[in-house]
Length: 86
Image (tube, rainbow, N blue to C red; front, side, top):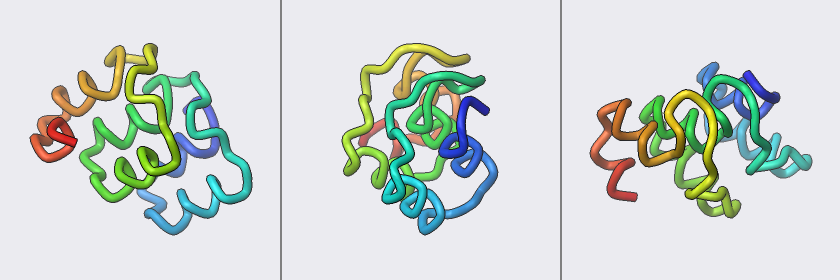
């Protein structure tokens, strides 16, 4: 994982932990790691609540990088239609 926020998203830490990290200053758009950023990780994992939280915190939906290129591609690859439509 590129950072603690990505690790929390991928590790199933839950929305409360992700929110705590964001409230304590974790960068919502920090890039790096396998998924590129936390939004891509949450999108691929099908975690709609966390995707919505990250979007509310102004995650960049157009950020490029990681295994899937961007959040839309990650959501598509993950097969979650609801997240693709967000």
